[in-house]
Image (cartoon, rainbow, N blue to C red):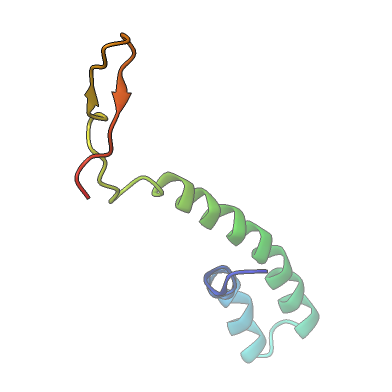
Length: 81
């Protein structure tokens, strides 16, 4: 499924061709070809942006609290929620 943001970005990338179609300088087939080329490019660019910004805004504690046990292995306990 293609995200709506990808389609919107593809429309924005092909906006010059849409404008040239409105002013009757190009054919509708040229506009559709440019839009179909813009869709995968927009998908790759937005996926890269989502990948880069995926970790922003997450709050993680620096470490997991542990308690020592008599057997020598540390048991982890959940932190405050």
